[in-house]
Length: 266
View 1 (spheres, rainbow, N blue to C red):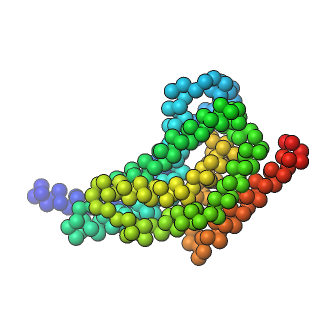
View 2 (view 1 turned 60 degrees about the horizontal axis):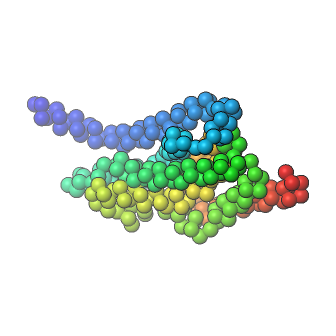
View 3 (view 1 turned 90 degrees about the vertical axis):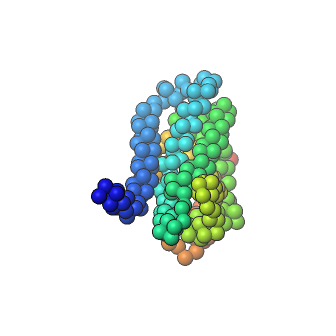
């Protein structure tokens, strides 16, 4: 009798595995946003000025890295959800056919690993900008020229062939999984890494724009996260046109700022 109950319970769990996975992803993103909201609310000009004026210590690097890593989870988990749910469906179907597939969270961990590495690079970039006195106490770019150049670079990259190739992979999760499928736990982790690399190739310059509006500006963070999600999931017949159009807008905005700076010096 006990065995029958256990089997029935296991089947019930499997029936709701999609709901469990979706809830786990939503929970990860939600916890990340709770952290960001709390950190943003706790920031003051005085405390950030004290941090900026002293030499960075290992604790400073660790805290800034933690901030970036959690921010990337909050921003990027929503955009990887469609691919994750397709992976879960494939895993469930394979299991019904007697093939053991690695848990879905192994795939997610591979994806998160890529953005964790990016967070380390972003931390180094923030340190460099801070040491060059190019960031305000609230972590906003203070140089119009550097900020405008970053905006132009983002616009150019937005319409570049590399961006468009990466975006196509991100917009076609089923195609990505069928083309890059690998068995086992290592294979699932590598697939997560691979998808994360394409996602990074699609979005890394956009993440650099965080320095324009403020690294802890919640509205700016949310705007970029929504833009990244929209690029990947909104059904558009020709996503290349949209990418090129948004790229042109970014580049023109950057050029306008550069022109204003050249004329007025501000």
